[in-house]
Length: 79
Image (cartoon, rainbow, N blue to C red; front, side, top):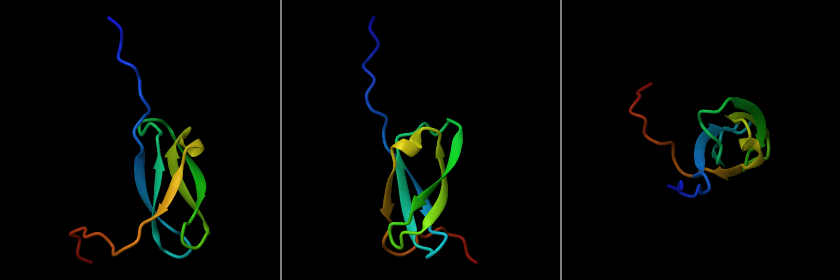
């Protein structure tokens, strides 16, 4: 019996915050979340500052960085 064709991996997103201006952004990739992670630097979509993030090894070749506009999400945690 033939195995089903392997399609492209689904894109995953991880939320991060700019170390310089504090804006929120998402880093999208198709990396395997169980793979070893590596630290890289991405540009903040708001201010252009370099911000360190970690992604699965190999995902650094397939990144998309998007701004997250709007208010902070509700976490249910009270300061």
